[in-house]
Amino acid sequence: MLSEAGRRFAELSTPAKLLLILSAVILPIGLGLVLIANEGIRDANALLRSQAQEESRLSARGIESLIARNAMALRVAANGRIGTGPDPCLRVQRSLSVTPAVARHFELLTPGGETICEVGNVPDAGPLPLVAPGDIALTILPNENGLTLRVGVSGGMATGTLSQAELRTAALDAVPDVHGLTIRDRQHELVLIAPDPLRRDKREYSTSVLPIASGRLNVLRWSQPACRWSPPATGSCSCCLS
Image 1 (spheres, rainbow, N blue to C red):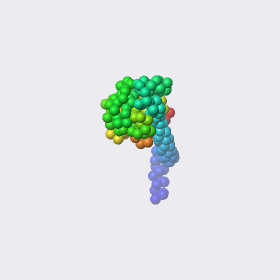
Image 2 (image 1 turned 180 degrees about the vertical axis):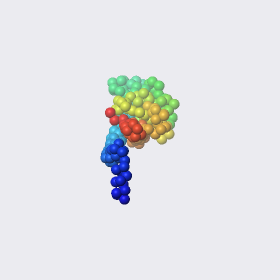
Image 3 (image 1 turned 90 degrees about the vertical axis):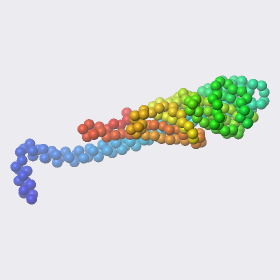
């Protein structure tokens, strides 16, 4: 059998012999390159996933920090001001005016939820429950494109609002490159940055969901696509790594 194979090989023309020899040499090299490329894609995907997770945490932390900063400022400014003198809203407004990067629109309420006074346009926060001193409640108002927060203080409650633009800026300050970002509570959601609908429908984005504000809200973030191996004709990897 070997002699028959050798006879047939000997009968081939010189170019055909060279082609067979080169194929036998190049084929293992090509297989090795494919394995190396696949390993590189896996490593790149792992790096992209790690980057996406870290960026998601930073975006969520930026939003959570904005909420916490405003809740703390409102609580400190309003604590003890309700029922202890004339025009409590004016005194709270003066206190907030010296606090950087906090919302200026708020209302003060009695412990039973009756409005005492209001500064600026505070949307109706009907879904928000009554809260005790030291507690906080949050709700998304999709019709108002914003988030309303209510804090319990000594003598009553204080309600403030954060706009969609303020929440978006807080997320982008933490991570400038965001493909899509949405915050959700148990009933509503607020889109801060809309993802590309075509790429989202094709599932080219990876998504992550992170709870913030002790689980009162969730941040849904769309991240860059994973690496994809192009057809053999192009032999390239469509990664998003720079």
